[in-house]
Length: 130
Image (cartoon, rainbow, N blue to C red; front, side):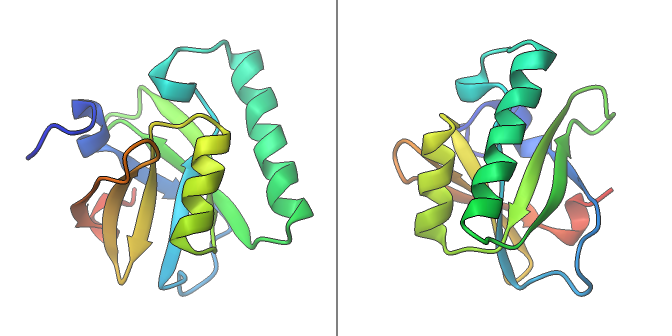
């Protein structure tokens, strides 16, 4: 696997809450936690997550909770699955100073850099759900 992103990104698993059934064909997963991979305090991360959720609500974007986590669950970053187009998803990711967003298209899980536009297909999304 290429190493254009931090190695831990390639092992990410996802838990989704209150997701529509079936899942949308196309959506993004974006977190506001730990911008540019800097470890923020829980208080700072929760506040950023709250601001992101308010932004989604103000713009009437359909969203549901999606938590990215390490395979063993020891590291978790709550985020939001958002039904929007790729351009808007990248704009939101940049606003919250994220290195990358996850983009799910036709069941494929892709990483998209918010900085360079580089993208990689990582796996099937269903294979990464826990």
